[in-house]
Length: 472
Image 1 (cartoon, rainbow, N blue to C red):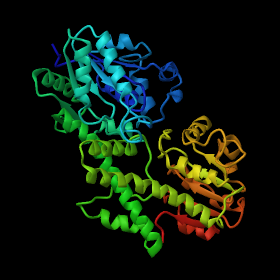
Image 2: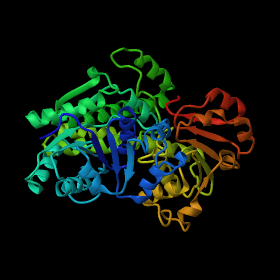
Image 3: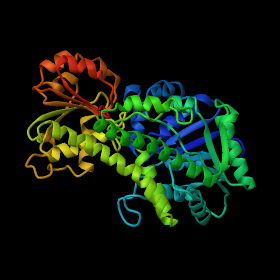
Image 4: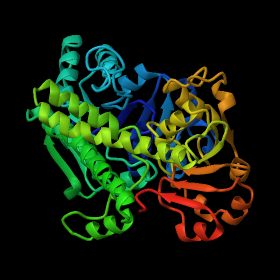
């Protein structure tokens, strides 16, 4: 029988979603034992490290939550089978990257890790289980998971729930602790209703009941993709207008403020930038595009695909502006990147605009110096390798390590630079001594503000040639 209350929860996957989500559940539900399991021993060792500065994820507030619950009712382990046996409710929170091969290459979600989880649950389970999709998945994946479970294990009942995450990196703990809404999709049979009741019971320990939305499982799955698509659409919309602002003499921040005052539109996600990044927006839109093509809706697919194309255009436009401004060549010139993470207050670099801007400039033989307060040198090199910049820069005799230098402090990174490109909106960048920086740069000294966070007037008075996004 599917329980309507649970005392043990297991999460398969200790990444950006699984780790913080389970930590917050454990903090707010001391009566529930929460086990987080992962096959990566280094990641689990980092979650168990006595020094909370060494947690595998940087997220404001995370270490305090882990400190409160770890060892009390929050446990991290590599024993996946034991976690499955112990958990009455099992969250699947594994990676679902965009496929890089075969049917759906470049668009469809790769569900091989989800399927492997389902088969392992069926193999190991010794009682009825509630299985919760936490990874972002295509519509009707729950149906596939259930078919696999039932085919592999005919003895036990499995209720499948969709519980998509709506976390923004940098504010994930606050998003979990003070959620706008928590979406739970389930089946309409008795087992489905018991399962939804059990998950509602977990979240109601700290989230008001009116914010717990229960739907059909397919509506829940599609709501996640749609939410990210609409948010990304807003970013691409204002970025499209930023290009027009630069040509006409308008100021994109003034335009965004004016339209954001309209209560029907609102101000959020109308900040022009070098482009959106992160693990979700592009992946989820491409997944949506693939689904639309699969169901023979080409016009709908084309509409959403344009959001991604505009984002790629914005990154290319930023890189081209650097080359054009530096007298049509950056060959041998020192370009300093302030920021590599896709946004502030996270060490996540997935789909960061910095990667693609760097690739274009490296292709033009620039010498790039990077400072980011949270991203490691090893991660930066991995990111460049992933976009084909290893072992040699395109058309260049130099290897990546000779083309790009990663700094652990900001001022040496900017010394004798021809230009500074601000790629991440870290607050500390606004506090620097820009007069000192100017004096130690080649002239003319350029600043390309990809996030529009610096004081353009102050920098211009110092002597910089300042170029912001959408500043005509």
